[in-house]
Amino acid sequence: MKILVLSNLISYTYNFRKEIIEAFVANGHEVVVVCDVDDVSKRDELERMCRIIDVPFHGKGTNPKEELKLIRVYSSIMKSEKPDIMFSFTIKMNLYGGLVAKKRHIPYVPMITGLGELEREGKLKKILMFLHKRVMPNAKCVVFQNDDNREYFTRNNIGFRRFVVVPGSGINLEKFKYQPYPKDERTVFAFLGRFIEAKGVSEFLKCAEDMASNDMGFIAAGTMDDKYKELVERLVEEGKLRYDGELADTRDFLKEASCLVLPTYHPEGLSNVILEACATGRPVICTPRTGCKEIVEDGVNGFYCNAKDVGNLESVIKRFISLPNEEKAKMGENGRRIVADRFDRKIVVGEYLSLLE
Image (cartoon, rainbow, N blue to C red; front, top):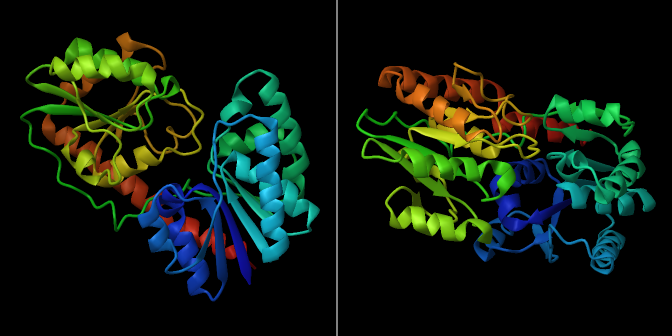
């Protein structure tokens, strides 16, 4: 069977879909991955098992001509490759790839990695709603990362013939090994992710500005939005924050942390950052929104905080600091157990293999 995989970036595909591709190939299938090659080293790794077609991708692009051009590129690829089935990840791949696959009578399986603009009122939401209602009912199966997103589809009359709920992208437990909890010398709070407002980065940085001390450190890593550049540079200069830039490998960063802080109100599918922190054995402070609450249990492997509420976040941080180090370490152990039981990437791989039947 020839399998076509539509994804956004090769770095994303390598980090979160590699095991699925490996399983497809190990079961005797030919795999062709269509994505933007943003990392040559990752391309070289994946090309050992599958073929890569480099297609430039602009995630936030809304220029109609450019979007139609991308659809035409997908159409040309499907016409020449003639896949037996198509798997897609992220919203543009799901919609544009789904439209083409539907027209060409190719079975397709989209994964819903979050609702994104579907949660924000406006013209774009209306367009996306229309496209979802055109694409999803004809999919062989729609893969959701959480029940809330599935219920949103049902509530808004976005039909689907069949669905499966998988634990996000899952977590590679062999890569993200449990790390002993840090000694009770200095509590380090970490933010890891894109520096965008909806991730709660403003609230995290305000906590760093107000609370950083010799006994309490704040570290951050991720793609920087220009909006935060001046503030981050000032906090770094004042010794209130350490910024590590964009990391290809997050394991050492998480090992150093005492607690991950993600006060997000972004429409997550299932937070990969939280999965990585829990697998490492680190407690998490996060909001109880979709994509977080499925992993973090309040008082068990972390604490909940309110979205857009610096005062509440600072109170929760103080609550965490007040815990004995043994209790913090126990939270970390609980997090590891939760992800090992429910979010092992092998579970996701198994679900995808079953969709080939």
